[in-house]
Image (cartoon, rainbow, N blue to C red; front, side, top):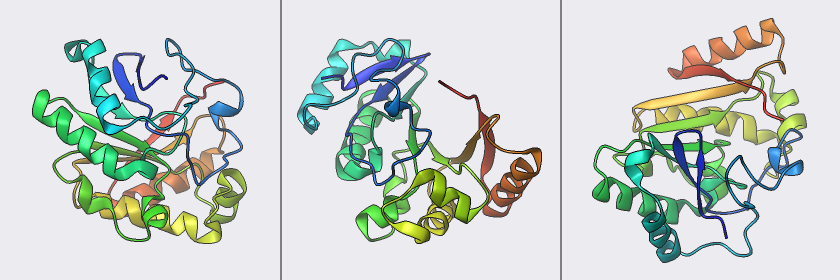
Length: 201
């Protein structure tokens, strides 16, 4: 199984293939790997011990950042994510840790979760995708339905209390200039950074 894998200058953690969304643009619909990784489809979810053991196969000095992101929503396994982050913070003090997420952790777990990231996660990157709630639901197809868009915004706002860097992203070429301006306004109101990330096939 591919648990840890390299993308650019970062080391990624593939915790799970579970996700509450079925995004129309999801990369896992068209590929089974990322750059130098093996297949990111897991035969089963790796245990905490297996994840930690896999770090022995990598020199952390070679990587700028540890990123929780694979072929699934990392906060589906939030308890394991937090334990891995704690291990990394203790073993490699100062190594930045990021979560790439759909921002639906509170819905997944049925309670607020942002406070659990305090002291363990340096950056939370949340997929905003669109400023329009109706269009968001069409694109993301969350199993939680129409409440998902507002829950994602609430999670982002909550994260600003506990995480030093909160980013919300859209993908270049997928929105109009007006829609991007609306996304920028939403991010400004939430107190987070807006980033337009490159399109990937």
